[in-house]
Image (cartoon, rainbow over all chains, first blue to last red; front, side):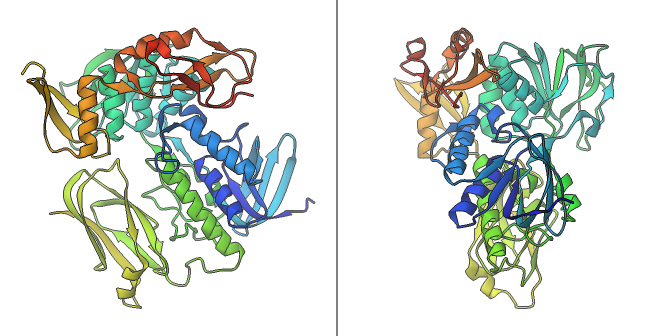
Length: 417
Length: 119
């Protein structure tokens, strides 16, 4: 029988969410903070994101992924955060018992006062999108290719087609072009890009890479290695249009078709997941339905900017601190935020109205000149909104004083004016 | 107007589309654009610049690549020449983050620096 070690705060994952949570937790006086990291180095996905654009908000300067991670790792060390590398968390339960294993430490259990989930997300693979054709070598997710090029120093191929216009896909289009590959096309099934405009300009336009909107890969060809793909235009229902199919010769297909929060551990602990975000249902301090378990960063919902991920880590740390010190965590009252048909997702999904809160909202389709309404307590005119760009709205505490004490729900909508 | 270009501003996520041309030595911009955007569009019209980020080969380490970047933006037309020069570099640990890997890259006046510590 193994005796459990007691821990104030366990953080799962040492990416930008986990590191920021750990630093904030130590700064606010939590003694025992341990980060569990399955990789052999801290930083999560950041070390392979060698492009710039990180840290504009947090550090007021434009950093690359490794630089952003480096700063946070040094802060974590300076604040005596214990980072257990090469350590896999096998299980957590609703009583916050955590089981981890590593080569040097063996199997061990911890009884935690609080747990912060910061496991990030993973990429949607080929199997999830059902493309017809053979199963040759040369099909990678964009992030896999990114790791190969930037960490291992291998090129995945020479002639490349990228399916999906997610940010990682577009960033890899530039990276592979710079390294001498020919990127033949980026196809996007929607009539608009699913990444940031900045990436469309600097990653595709700069290298004359065609972006085929309302197009998708309908078949993969090749025996041992990819020899090409069939690309077709699609209608509004994403069905391919007859007569538009054409062949593009290539040796590599990259998939950039979405990210999915990695919540296997969360489910073990009984954390309820929101089908719209793929992450936990949380309140404004990012506490899940399980007391003392918090969720932040891309395991909660996929963010656009790393700075937002770190901000969420800090909010979760505040929540964890309140839980550890027996202070309110916003559970006394629950006001559900319910989006109408224009809203893709909202985080947090419920609030207490006891403190100010930042709402993260994604619309379902691009809109212009819209009005965002939250119940009848808040209204804001917004010039434009896109699904690829999260809207962040800071709600001051005072607006909730206008609410009926009995109200349990606020409708959220975006309507074009 | 043969010198007309359509440029998208990337200063913020809005992505304003502008038309830019030269008239009697002055740069003219058509399309609503903020002050910050105007500066970017002008620079983009005169001489587009980019921060180049890449990696260099590491010798004698279990780590295979060291991420590097130009300290500031360099002319876009120099990107491939810069990549060629980076491909010649072999680096040995230790390297400290921020250390100069190539000084005055291609006479641009801009250094290439290390983006991580290499122990």
